[in-house]
Image (cartoon, rainbow, N blue to C red):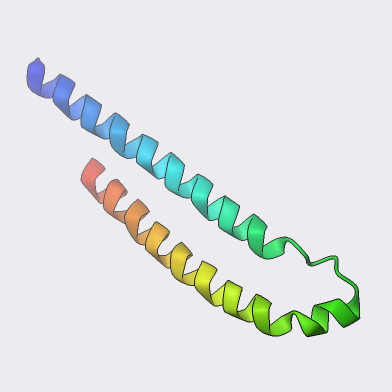
Length: 76
């Protein structure tokens, strides 16, 4: 009985971690989309900055996805 409760708690924690990581991915994606309504001149000026931010966000996304995969693996 106690082992089942511990397993259940561990699974619940993993699911909560997955939810938090997915929320982080959404925040990252929404942050990347911010500013897409800039006019063309401003968009051209900020293109380099956006590219750098996009790369940083992509790296963060990769790390978050790896974390999610780890959490999912712990559920099996």
